[in-house]
Amino acid sequence: MDLKQLEYFVRVAELGSFTRAATALNIAQPALSRQVRLLEVELRQNLLTRNGRGAVPTEAGKLLLEHGRGILNQVALAREELGAARSSLAGRVSIGLPPSLSKLITVPLTLAMRKVLPKAQLTLTEGFSVLMYEGLRVGNLDMAVLYNPDASPELDTATLYEEELVLISPVNAVKPRNSGRSRKPLSAAVTANRISLAEVATLPLILPSRPNAFRILIDNEMSGIALRPRIAMEVDGLNAILSLVKEGMGHAVLPRYTLSNFDDADPFAVRSIHSPPILSRLELAWSSRRPTTATQKKALDVVRKAVLAAIRNQA
Image (cartoon, rainbow, N blue to C red):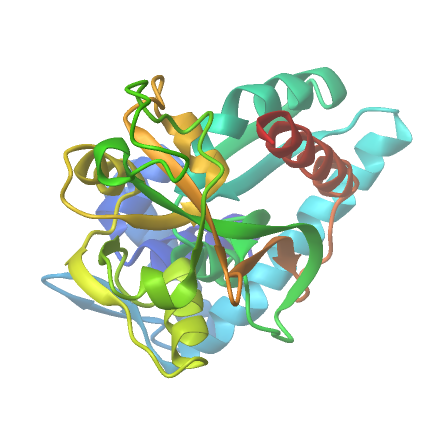
């Protein structure tokens, strides 16, 4: 079995299209189709069902896809270990980051990776936890920072940080509790008010739709006190949610550091939530199905340190 043909097949199967795979592999589509067809002839199996919308693995193709990823990863691991024997950590490292952390962590993480792994090729992908879990499963991501991942035999995880979600409101919607005489604007930097989860349930909330990790967590905590969130809007975009809060359209429930996505936090008021608090777990995850290369192991340590440093700087 030709490794190049196997690599071509895996890429077509993962991307679901000869056109997209040819672009990703930087080869002509007819040459790609010919190599995949030669593999099918050698194995005496149709591996892909070709249709007007792209290419879908057959049952035989699904089986080869599972084995093919492992074979290609083992080859990459062997090459990297040989490189490590020459004291050179190199290779590709693909990392998934959640939108709430992306702006906060992208620059310091990139700088840290260049310092520690200057010969590695870094790919950063922003996405919600559900999409990144799928990226880890199919091999598009080597590691990802996830919120509250369910236990899975397909993932190894390490807890990075446990945090409380806070209520983020338009500043004009929050009245200071001390007295009515002060006319100084209330800002996110000075607001120390607290609010119960039962009170949060009465407010118009702008939340992401399920199966977003924060949404599931909020729904579960409210159901624990026999309440449901009052949904003003469902919006699947962090900056869009905060922009709508800024305009007075509702309130958000997010980690405090998400306000780092805005240069000016003054339009926002932040209150901690109690009775009970909403605790979110930030975890670093990688596939348990594929061997981890020496470069990836080093990258895991770099990501862990960079994420913790960035969050603590915002505390």
